Image 1: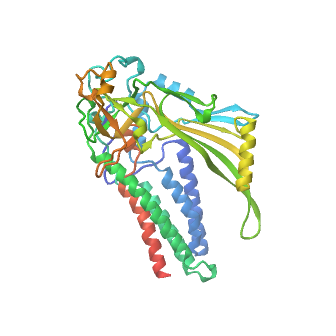
Image 2: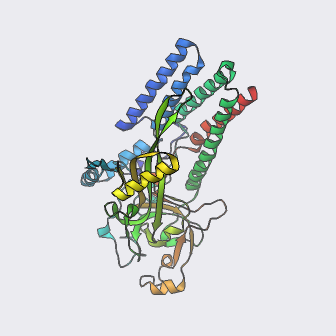
Image 3: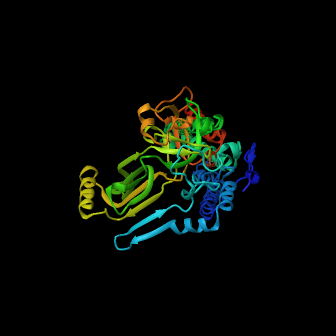
Length: 448
C-alpha cells in the first residue's frame, strides 16, 4: 500500500472519532455522562453539577484517537494478507483455560506497535550473513527513508474534550472553594494545582521524547556512524539466539522466540474500610508483588544491513502493549496460594481474591526503534565472530543504551518510527490541558 494512502502531515486541526466498537462504546458512555452533568447544572443552577461531566469528557478525550491512528489501522489491514490476519485473529482474544479454577488468558486483538507494512519473514533471512543486506539491500518498506516521518495534527477532538474537562473541573473547584458550607476551604484548589503540576511534568517528558523522535534523522545501518544515531529495523537473533521466557518460573506460562522481556505478577487485594459516615465497604486494588526483566543481544536489520544491539544495556525500554496475560482466582499452586494469602493478611490485613501475570517483550521478527550509542566492538569479539570479517563497517560496531548524549536520551521501543509517532498526539495537545489545570488551580488558591 502506498504511503500516500494517508496524510502523514496532520495540519492544525483534524476531526477524529473512534473507529472500533469498544472505543465507540466508551465515547458514547462519556457523552451520556457529560449530558447528565450539563442537565443537572441547568436544572439546579449549581456549577457543582458539572462534576458528573468531568469523567464523561475525560472518557471522550481518551476514546478519541490520534490524528493518524485510523489511517494507519486501515493501512495495516490492507497491507497484510487476509491469511495472516486470520492467523493472528485465531491466536488472539480471551480464552477460559479452566472454568473451575477461573483461570484465563488474554492476547490483545490489536497491536498498535506491530508492523504496518509487511516485513520479511524468517524464511527469507540469511542466517549465514546476519550483518549483510537483506535481498537487494534496499531499506525495509516501513523504514523512514521510504515512508518519511509523520507529523501529528496540532489539535484534534481530544484537545476539545480534554480542555472542556479542565474548564468543568475548575468551575466545580471554584464553586466548592467559595461555598463556605462545604468546609473544604482552599483544599480543592491545592489538589487541582497539584494534579495539574504532576500531569504537566509527565506530559513534558512525553512531548520531549516525541520531539526527539521527530527531529532526529534516521541512519541506515550500512552507513551508521560511531556516535548516537537513530535506527529503525527488524529484530533478528544474534549468535546468542532467542529465549523461552517462563513467567514467574511457571512452565505453563511460557513464551518462545523472545529477545527481551518484562513480566509482572499482581494480586487483587481486598480489605474492609469504613467511610466518613461509618459505613463499611470492601475496597479492592491490584498490587504488584514481583517483577522481572531481561534480554539478550540481537541484530537490528533495516534491509541495508544488520548491527548488533546490546538490549540489556538500555535504561529506557518501551515494549508497548503486553503480549499475553494470565489471570486466575488462585495462585498456580496450593502452596503459593496459601503463602500469598498469609503474607497479604499479615502485612496489610487484606484478602487475596485474584492473581494476574502480564508479559511484555520483544520477539524475533518484531519492529524496533532505537536511539543508542554506537561504539567499536572489541577486537577479541570480532575475531570470535565468523560473520564479522571486517568488510562491512556495520559488523565492527555495536549499539549500547547506557551512554546518553547532550539533549539525547538512549531509548529502545518496540515498533517503527511510523507506528510510534502515528499513535502519538502532538506536543500541544499533551501540554496545554495540564498547564490550564495547573494555572487554574493556582488562580483559585490566589482567589481563596
